Image 1 (cartoon, rainbow, N blue to C red):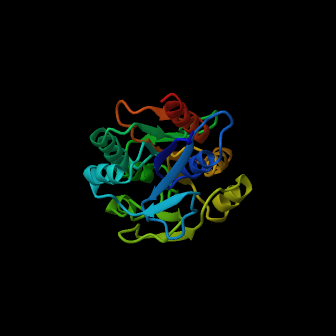
Image 2: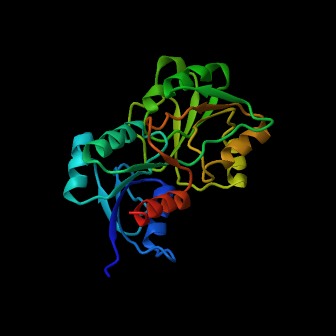
Image 3: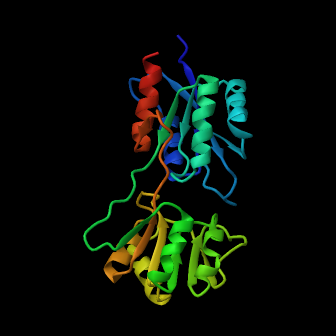
Length: 260
């Protein structure tokens, strides 16, 4: 009897997406299924770490385009494993899954939780984060990525100096006084401590991305007594089930199709 082949489309670009593809590519004992995994990348990073399976790069043309692509390629299940702040793509995924009648699962690493000694300031957007900075410090470690730097390029932040860390070089508009550090996580605690001291950082800005790869900066800031502006993540679209780890997501997908 032939083993069923399930086509999983993973909207990726995260470590969790890559690990999910690796998990589904490996046979699971006692589960009579094979998975064809296609990972879709936005193409914003110049040299991404590619997962196993098929990879496509670029957009779909909105929810209608994504739904059409899934129908054309026989997608059985859609997993939104994009960055926790990719709100537009998550909304498109929810709408496309409904249009194509394909089950949808969101894979989201848990957010960070403040600990004793943390001096966190919550912000609902990058613009709100920029507005908080003048009262908190003068030398800013900005770790929100290369997208959205325009929020920190306004007149209210002209007196501040920014160390901007990103995987690829940012494009204008950018802060008036800025140094760029091109680097890719994971980062270790000792390195983050040295970076804060070397650049005399007195305030950190980060998105609540969660995960371990970039969390050491939070520990280093806590140890140094440095305030941290944390941009809250947008919610997952209403009604979309959420898995917190790649293993949990893989189990849910296997359970869904093993049960028919």
